[in-house]
Image 1 (cartoon, helix red, strand yellow):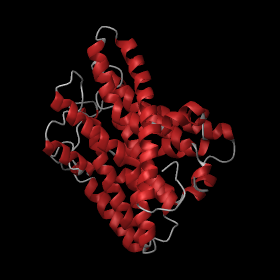
Image 2 (tube, rainbow, N blue to C red):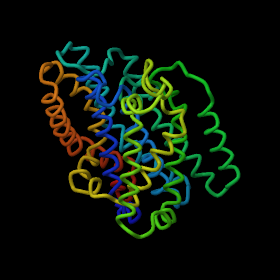
Image 3 (cartoon, rainbow, N blue to C red):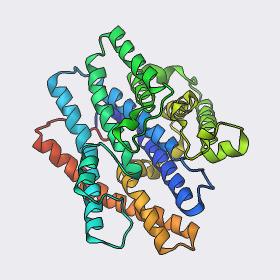
Image 4 (tube, rainbow, N blue to C red):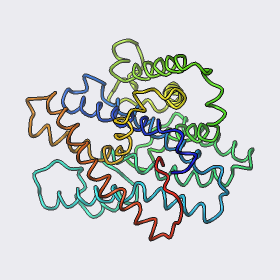
Length: 351
């Protein structure tokens, strides 16, 4: 772990919060018809993930000289982080579909489906987020190279954010083109990561109770912006409550609310996000994210009449499967890829 990453273990707690928001939303959709969070509530968790992704890239790398060796190390590190488990999930779903196994898996049924997923062109269900994440990696390489050219950098980022909020709809479901409207979250994350040291010292003062109060207030506002909560308390556009599906990404409010939760969490470091359980769930969050939807769907098939028990068991099974995949697939494959790539550097445990 680098010296820079070692000081903010709350980041794993934020990962845990994000993945549990996604899990809760999908559990609500699958077992309760969206009655708890509203359909699309899991997008709040994805927003947190995207800000966290940008933050970590800037926090860990922006101060390094962006020479060829450093950028190669960045690419190796990022792909080693996500690709092995993603590859195995895609291939496992393809084989399960081809063999006709009596399991619910992502509908990756053809060689073309496999190729589109592994090349980040398209993604079923939660797998759609991997494409934008990889595009973020490519964009960060550009930002990194432009870091000392302030006016060019500002123009580049402003232009992309402007395009992101243009009033247009892209008819390319679950593809890398869904990056539209997600870009501002990545850029805000990068800005927070770049200015973290100053930011942490200037907000909320030094009183711990003040920091904690601000965090809980921001979290309450964030939670109240879920589709179901909005439907109950405010008269808002149907695009935010699900007609036919909520699309909050184009509303700057969500960017501000998500950034506020992220910033105040990093500064306040509340116990709910820094306890050993939260940090552990954060560590296994990538496998958790990839696996939880299939676990929920299969649990519904097994125990359709016991909804609360099914959700509880799905959570337990997801944690167990994610732990196994983290320790026996993610970590070993990450080390192997780095060794094969000849990368002799420390492991960024939070990256």
